[in-house]
Length: 70
Image 1: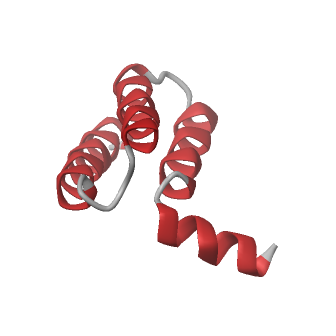
Image 2 (image 1 turned 60 degrees about the horizontal axis):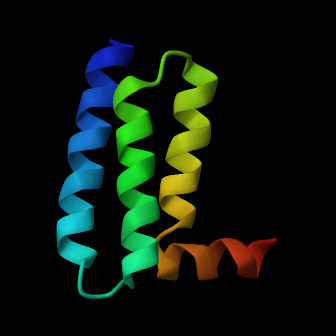
């Protein structure tokens, strides 16, 4: 179940990356790609959650929302 959810999450992040490629600079895209690669080999649930948080925080408009509530 966790593996299937992880695979779906990675697929969704890849689709999101495709949609946002012209709204993010190269360093943000590189970071997003790196996080996706790490998710594909993540072993523990805590590691997966941490990486998903990093992926979401690396998207500029989501980062602004997080900063607003911090």
